[in-house]
Length: 437
Ligand code: XLS
Ligand code: NI
Ligand code: NI
Image 1 (cartoon, rainbow, N blue to C red):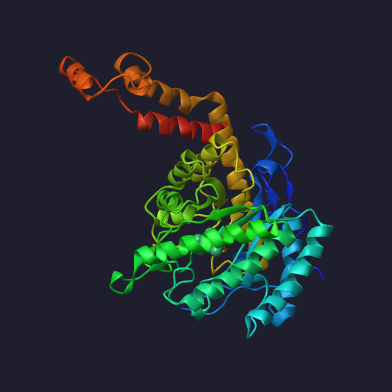
Image 2: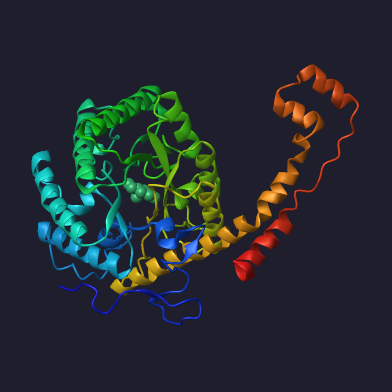
């Protein structure tokens, strides 16, 4: 059965095209930064938003009109697999991502839940074998069910820890079976609401114990995908332990996990943490842990994770700039952890939305590539730090000076600073966005 019968395969038609169901900037075969765009960007469809989200919000019922709405139970799960592959192929994409609970319904016992998963996983495996679609990452949903009310690996209840371990064990087996290129941990309820009832130090130790066990199990079954932690500062809990890239890195170092994990950076989580998307990418990059990206955007007028499809070219350009400096995302990709607005309820909106996100990143990529090629920012930045190339600066960097010598030097020296030229640089960036990229 065809689920999206009114939409044909989306093709690249170029920036002049007026066809809303065509790519204007995303040309999979075009070489940018020495690689085919498709191989560099590795776009991925997020199952939970595109196949599952129904438009429910705290004030109202589902709005999404979906061709699989008439099904229920395992039949619904099967229809979604068929629809997912049709959508991914019509978009001309190669990757998708899911939570265990997205793809199959929970049973009354863990064993029944796992049987449901097996049925759907084998269907997904068949579809993957007959297409060129691959799994970017999978993860376990350890936040929706009421058992996770106080957390999963950080729950005060050891039985919940054990249940979560069982769930991740199964998810790692699925990752291995489907050749998932990464495995994500987003600590949905790994955080706390009040210190009055929380042993934070102990919860963090337990989280580390959980991750170490995951590493061991992956080794045991021969799963070689990259482990990723996805930082988020709040929502659902008030204080999430993986607040942002910097706090995730500190945790990974403290608990001896830094060699086993990278980060999955989400744009909307960055802004919720009071950072820009590019800041979070930069922090990850300089610590060598930039692994993958959840591509979306928030709304500065709304204080939650709105998960909008990314359309802000300024942001996609600066993000792609960081990704280029990182030499790409390697086993990671750009996963659209994004959903259509509640009012964009038609199935065709799923295509418009993905096209908007894909084209925004493709354009941002081209602009960032040109900026990098011309070395505009690098040259400015190199000059800005040039005082460390000679004289006292070279002594500081070379380790041949100390506080006493520096104090003596400072006594004799009048300081002359130079402008940081923010406005000039922003206007150059605009010129690249509009004309040169
Ligand atoms: C929620 C997260 C979630 C993860 C996967 O805010 O972004 O969707 O990406 O569990
Ligand atoms: Ni996410
Ligand atoms: Ni999110």
